[in-house]
Image 1 (cartoon, helix red, strand yellow):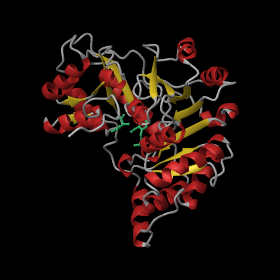
Image 2 (spheres, rainbow, N blue to C red):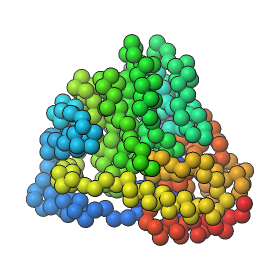
Image 3 (cartoon, helix red, strand yellow):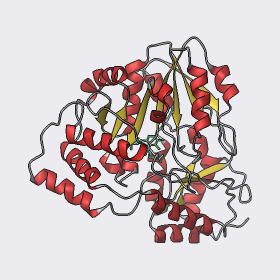
Image 4 (tube, rainbow, N blue to C red):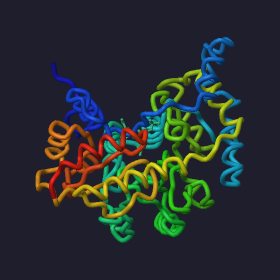
Length: 381
Ligand code: PMP
Ligand code: GLN
């Protein structure tokens, strides 16, 4: 059978590969990003209540008004931003879907999209599935900051969009206000649109703050901002998220969304609306404690931490004192021989660029982190 090759990524996504390998070898899974602890009981109870109350049929296409209003109120409270729940917010089955939908709403064959690499692995396939071309610009290791001259050099008459991600998966780097100003200067007087993947917005550490594209009045007019409830409420398996964009872009987004999944899980929307309305505590301090605990444990291993992660629930580490294997091979070996699964960072580069780094997810119970690092203590530097 001849079937079309819709994108250039070969094989299965690394998150599936490493989680399966972890299971196969009974390894502690610090690879794919998901928490291993329970969600807030009030959220579980709200989900159960929604189904027993009979909220089991289709919700409106754009998302439950109650939930869109709760999201708007939450942004007013946390950022002081006025967002119109009817014309600017769309509820989606996760952020991955929202990114794909936004690309599909704006891309035509032949368009180019600038991607800063390392990048979350769905971006480039999503661009190519829409007949467009991804133009990669490397971030500057080891701090993974943006080299603005390289971004400027990558812009052509065909550039339709730039996708950015802060806090950044896999490196944990975060954007400053100046980064947004630099981006604004580059796209001013062009038709370039922005996709801003901000799924880890509430996981920023060391007293720093997240700057959302929505706070940049000039950029906001040309941006889709994408969010995930999974990263905020530790319920990644619910696959719930949302897109915030100005009315014209939201209309284009919904034009695709209505024929892609049409509407999103109703009881989950009721539960999240109730939970948001309750006013939930900030989550960054819990995750910051986990980061600090993980880093203190890792100090007794031969891994190298170049920069403590500033945001997200990932920490990148070097293993040059342990081995010079390519990172895929090293991650596989570590899973099989030491029982700890991680993600090779080269999976985030379309070129497979290998800086001999692996990514750990520390969104885990303290005992999981203790057990994992205990296993790694046997490694020799
Ligand atoms: N963007 C980034 C950078 C991510 O790490 C994730 C995590 N899966 C997503 C998007 C997607 O989130 P969701 O599970 O809501 O699709
Ligand atoms: N965002 C998570 C990660 O980067 C999970 C991604 C996925 O499983 N597709 O590990």
